[in-house]
Image (cartoon, rainbow, N blue to C red):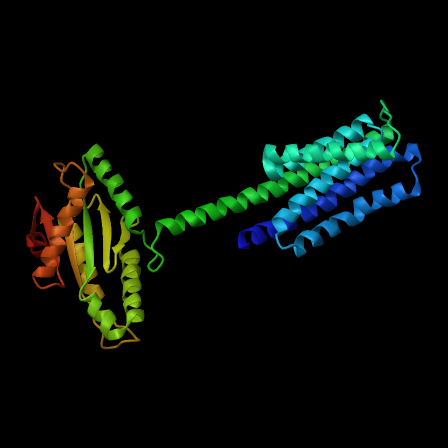
Length: 357
């Protein structure tokens, strides 16, 4: 219901303007073709109703319908039926008739593709049949100069208006697609890459290091005693801690570094082209700075980080082994007292690089 209502009302709004323009220009075209035929007054009245009143009736009809999307499709079929009716009324005058058919076909294809084009064509044929029952069957093979000029506004302006509407819709859909893609790639709480996206980036970095024979490092960061923080200070305070860490990562990392939320209270960072000793200094500075942060909502709260670092190893067959090295270093940091940075080089966790730096 929501899908049909929202989508249908949006469609009705878009078509409201184009229908006002299209049938108004069509009124000029049909009037020029009908004038030499001296039609009855009711025909003129119906023609003016179709050209000036029908767009507003169709919009209100769709707007008040339980399913506006279906109502608007019905209105489009009525448009096609009326187009066929006026083709018969004009006695198939070539240019006004061809203009009406082509504009209707373009509209139907833009709205519903070939399937709706066929439905609109069937409605047009039905309209022609009804028109032939009311007006004497005849064929006018010549189009006068007046009728030619009367068709030009519809031929020139309506495709431009329809093209503009399609462009705006495509632009909106493209923007929404980019926004959805960004949402699917980021963690909603921290704004960093989510687990899946970060691992994809890790694979890209691993292949780059392999291909270019360059080094790099990755870091796994764990917030110490995070469960206790949630239990003691509440989940709101825990969320603030997570956002503070993500903010600090964004502020202190290079533009080429890639940070993500690995899951829960774990974060992850790719540090391209950075030797392990320099990566250790960077992470130690981050750990030290984060430990000094104060929290206005919880003044007594102090938070520390355990960080595991691993350098790129050309001997590794895939990125998972690189990640395992960082995980082993993080485990070592957590089991040897927490609040520290442990480096993993040559497959073994150690702290010498940090101490020597």
